[in-house]
Image (tube, rainbow over all chains, first blue to last red; front, side, top):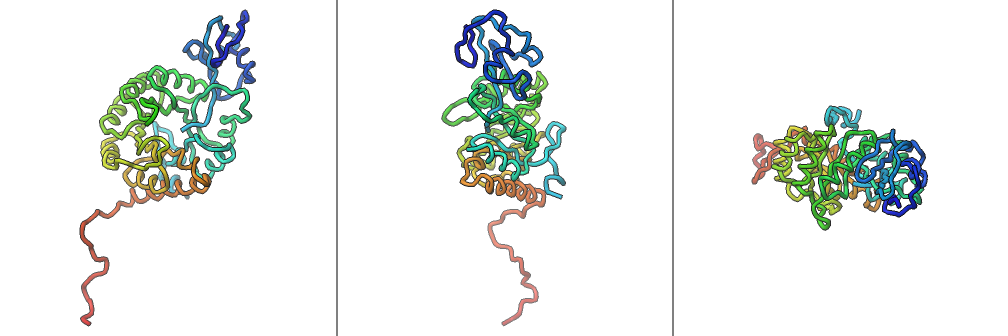
Length: 67
Length: 260
């Protein structure tokens, strides 16, 4: 299992941050997007090579309206 | 030439187009937000970072780019220094900016800042190379401490976020302005144009405004009004107001008065 934005996903071998973003409908080089895995920022340059281990908590964030 | 072009606000060496910073929260539609941005004349708008919603049709980042404004990400919703520091790191990655509007909230009902967590987060973020603009209380001592740890500006509240209660403690705000070596940006509490004008008359360098515009009956018209308030207040501050006095002082001389 992987937790993506609080939602459970079936883990797959070798799944990357970029794969998970695709599941959310985000293009690989989308502007205004950031990702944390288990409370650590994953730099954009590492999205395609960073494998996400089972049990990981992934937060994929973007700009929303706010004060 | 506009007032703001003659008298630009400089924060951390960067010249801002306007002394009004717009918060993007609370606008009912993206079109309304875009209109308010244009009418307000702002060059800098705040955004929050939230989970990507695959159902959401609009990209705020795209709208803001079309408007030609810079983004100031915030750490709204963070209750601890740890969360705020991590959120700032994510914002830097998402928006390619070192600027962060630091918010560390201590209480859900009042949304007042948590002073100790705020100071701790500010110190960590400055050490990591961020340009930190902290949302703070109107406490002059805390404002000074934030400046001492290297914040690029201080952003005291006039009254709680979204309350529209204006400036509740003009005296404290004046004390902050008097001592500050960095820009003072009034953040939170503005309800209408006169609040923004008062902040500027008291010596604030800029005003950040969200709800007063976004939740007004006519956000576009209020954006225009608050822009005028900021500009009028700034001009009045620079002009130097007359002192308040208890008794009248005649503006027409008594000399040469006819004996009737």
